[in-house]
Length: 97
Image (cartoon, rainbow, N blue to C red):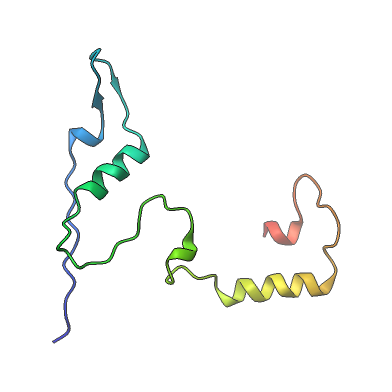
C-alpha cells in the first residue's frame, strides 16, 4: 500500500478577511500579511512539502520547469531571423496566438 498524503484543510476565518486597527476602521489584509500568518502557523513537525505563496522565483522549485516545447519554440524563432525587428505596439501576430 502506498503512503497516502494527508490533505490540507483550510477553514475560512474573519481574521483573513478584515483587520481591526486601533481607530476601529477595517481594511483588507495584505497578501504579505496573510503569507506571514500562514507561514507562522505551520506545524514544524509536519513533513508535507509546500510551495511558498508569492515567492515569484520558480527556479527555487525543480517542479516548475519550462516545457521543452516552449524552449524549442524560442530557439526556433531566434534561428529563423524572422523576428529581428521591433514589434508593433499590438505585438507580433504569431506570438499573440
